[in-house]
Image 1 (cartoon, one colour):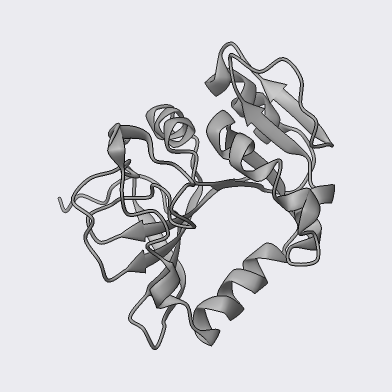
Image 2 (tube, helix red, strand yellow):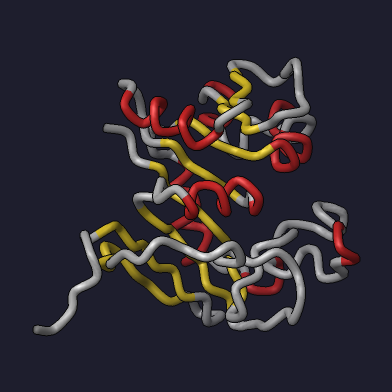
Length: 197
């Protein structure tokens, strides 16, 4: 069974909006785009490179697709696997995708992703995609979180758990702290919430 892995740059107050650059996602008047840049260091870069080089397909929302589709085909030397990975794009508005190989997931997104998880293939990596993440969490479809928790609060912006979650337990499978204070931690599902009897 394929896993859905949410890979997120996140602030201490849970914001995942526009980590990479000022113009990435200014919706809602978000003014702090590019907030991860000051925290880059060799430790963080090594973890990101390791994750980027794993076998994967992408599961992303339309806004993330719109940001990535013009960029990554021109920068494949940075992330060779992203262009050959199948891009599953959750959207009820797109009708065609130029960045191939790609497939549009529309209609009942949760049901389509449930079916996709049952098919053979690599794990499904989700980056950003705040609206899609809400759907995934609501329907208990996230198997793991690979978080890069930055020592910053942003006060506003799209948050990872804004739409709520299904109660679940997780275990840490890998962790590290960078020289700039970014906590990198991987969590995997560990069944139901343990309750002391």
